Image 1 (spheres, rainbow, N blue to C red):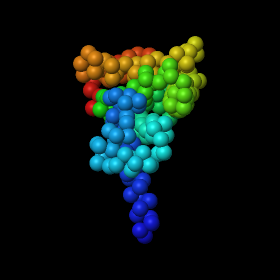
Image 2: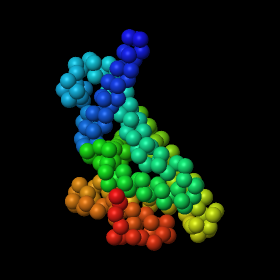
Image 3: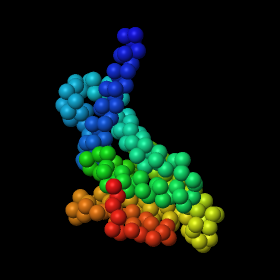
Image 4: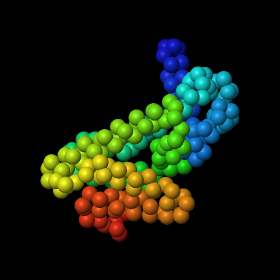
Length: 208
């Protein structure tokens, strides 16, 4: 029993470290996360904090995976079982912008922030981030293709452009809110997504 409890405690400690690291990284970037700051924030020793990962690179990769899982649960999971194609694209837009309007991390969307930080920096973090984003892009493309096949989008639709447009709009929410103080940034992005998908916008509706 004691052994099982120690495994659970170790897992909980690891999750606490990753949650704290993701919060820090969303504001200051993954490079801004140091073992010393984590240890201080969590009232741990430096050895205890880094011991769950081995080194800073493994901590960064684990933090990225943690944030990607939060995105999956908040954005993909609510739409996963919706009918593929336009219905799922609309469900994705809804959950995505709800997530953007009430981000899980203090700096806004972790994945968007990390993409700006690592897009021109080759290495394991860049590659892992690109893999996460490619999977998401591929899902958007797949549903756009299904929407075309169902007649919900014109046959001439460039499905890569649809996916690119949705991603670009989502990426603007945090900068618009934090740089310009636009509290309706997620709503504006959502309505622009609906325009892109050929749906009627409801500019006065709430994201709540």
